[in-house]
Image (cartoon, rainbow, N blue to C red; front, side, top):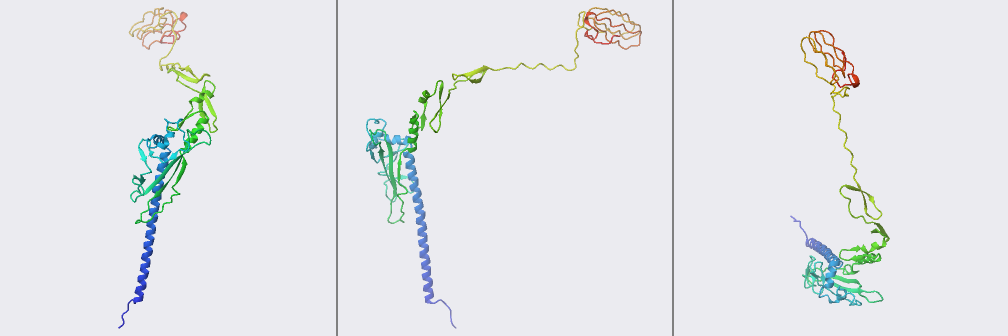
Length: 363
């Protein structure tokens, strides 16, 4: 009985194929690992470059760098020596000092780790990134150079270990060559062109001296992109508490006027109370009615308030009514005698209704 299996040639062929596959996989893995390390190295180099450029372009940091005692080749830029030491041909390396006055980086002995941290000594496997940094004074073609522009030249390199996977950093990509505070210098020139004083720390152009360019009492309000000065009145102060501003006078002072106060509205009328004029002849225009009772009523006495009361309710006849001012109220109902007397003439007080009495009917 025959037994089937792999021949020696088949086994050798399979082994060769497997080895080739493993070799290819190892090569691919190494290439991927090297590419990842290369990207990481580029990120670290970019971070180092940006950090140095930002520090060198900081007004406060550069001032501290210039005044640092170890930076002797920057002495011509020191504020205490300006105008006395020319900067023609000045150049060299220096220690970078931060805005707080602390030494930030010394490129002669320090470098950076793979985590962008400062370390020393530079150019070692533990401190692989090193920086070359120097400055050069850029002076005008003629005259004494006391206030030059500052040019920075430098680059970043990485230490190559013989045992690790080689990482080739593109030094040209991370080399820098720029004029320090190029934007700030442009602002300073623009500020000086209009007679202002540029403050490199606050990056502000002080224009207080420009007020003389505006007619009195105007002052400089703004400067447009064409460097044209816009003048305006300087409004200072406030109106008193009982006044309001209605304008600005020709001398720039406020035109204040007293506030207008409207009178209070009249009170609303009382609803349900009749109104009437006073009757002639005196008094308040009314007299109380006599009490009700039996028998005849007494005579109505004229005069006084100019009105006659109605006859009382009861039996008997009513007495005569005597003329007087005003009107008489209507007689009350009763079961007794005759009609009440006439209200009489109102005299000078008008008729009974105008007299202010209670009744407007005469009898």
